[in-house]
Length: 252
Image (cartoon, helix red, strand yellow):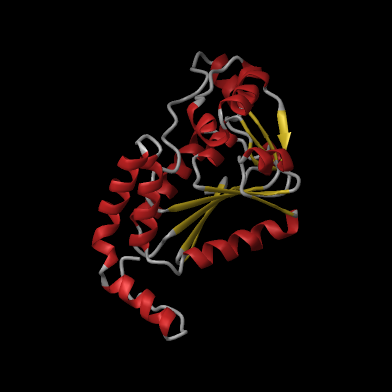
């Protein structure tokens, strides 16, 4: 598709929004195709890590294409179509944030497990500027109530260093180093067994809504089948023998 590039480099897949002329804003066909790519990634047993980014250095994604929305409104249509859920997968997802990540673009970044930003990245909840509601929970969970509420109600932009300070991103690098940094991280995680990546992610997300004791018990239940498996035996043995682990054809 002209507006999205979907590339598989097993064990990593890349989704690049290729609409730099409109700051990588998404019209309905683009949104639908991104969802199709995410579903393909989730079902492909050879893939472990999905990276989402935008073409160029100006924008990661700026959310809904407002000019397309205005045309839709003028013809009697809705402001926005029904948007499919973002990044609904148990596998690992990374946002490589280059430039502006605002409105729905910020929501896409928040839906990823890990966010790495270039120095020129900017983040903002622009929905309020356009009279649109914004789902607050993902941002509140990630950065805390105070910083999230400020962003949600003010529509202010924050830069990459402020995003790092409040925990919105985990790393800031130069624009030139963004893709190589993400490639290296994705490749490293791609060496780990899928079963362990999935169990760890499930335990982390489910545990947020549990007591400490419940979270501990849930994590132990998820990891129990893996603790004395061929996967864990190989990992421990490889360490003892000072070699790289070979997990073979684990559905990993």
